[in-house]
Length: 429
Image 1 (cartoon, rainbow, N blue to C red):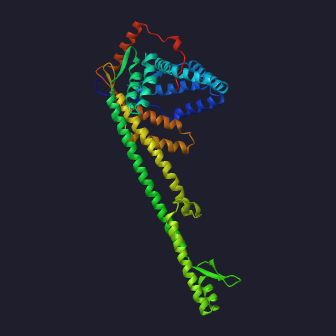
Image 2 (image 1 turned 30 degrees about the vertical axis):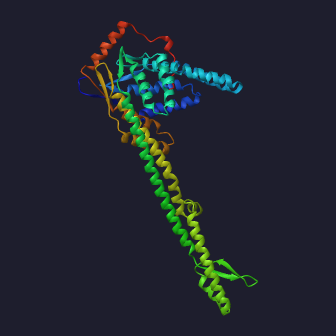
Image 3 (image 1 turned 60 degrees about the vertical axis):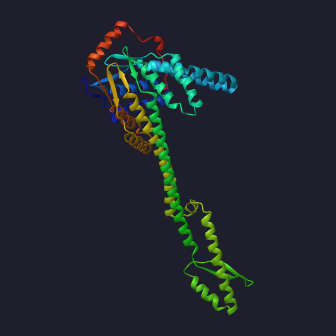
């Protein structure tokens, strides 16, 4: 590898991975989850083997039984917690506290297991973080988030990522992540501004949409209020209001007025004017207290049915766009920040993910997953993995084969081996 950048390649194909995915899913269901350990190994092997640096892929060496043992332990502890909580809430609370205390140890064991079972060109990765260091970043630092009302979140994020990156090794060489706390604050502040801007635009859009729908409903209601009416009399000769269609209003009124004396006709016209004024007053009052969605719900027409569906669907879509925008911005900026400030001796990394690319991936993947009832999951996973990996590059002044070969010799000289005590996967992945 020369000083020029070498792009990481990903050669996975959705069609190939679908066969692995569907078999993993069906066998995991049939075996009540037992096969999920073998499924994890098959899945990770596929993605590792199709991630290439200068034409050579990574490899994953974990044994399914080691993963299964870790999951059996996790299930047993969960059942124990449920039983203790039912019969003795105090004992359940004690077990929960013990779990929180053990959480840093579980994190270290999981990272160590995953690293030591990963390799490239025959050289294994490793993780040498300790419980005390993990407890500080997982238990102590998060307290600062509550004490500072969230202001310490970028600081805690920087410390956590630094712990994970800096304690990973390739052979005997440590990775070094040099991103500063202020760099994380810049990302988080911009993300906060993005959330405010998107929320404001969504609020304005919803206000305009509701205002428009209310205006159209008011116009239609006012039109309905102007339909002609007629009157009749009861058995005692009193006038009564009767709603009538526009076609028979004129003939009904003419027949009725023929039998009236001039005094009765004058009284009839006076009552009609009073009735018209009352209707106008009611219409004006209804406009003041109108529910913008009331007419749409009440109307049985196709016009309002479609409008109601659109009005209800748009907030859901806008909310999804808000969440995906937040996730796309955060993932792209944090990933770029971490990799652009990471090196392995004289080997440097760089990343150039873009928010709009990830946003499009998230939205299109979600739409296809919904339309296919989840069967397009392999396709979505392959798309996302390809984008992320192919936007990471490495550069340095050394030949990659020579660099790895030197690390292999140094590792053999020291004689480091994977200890049997770490042959249990306690990770959550």
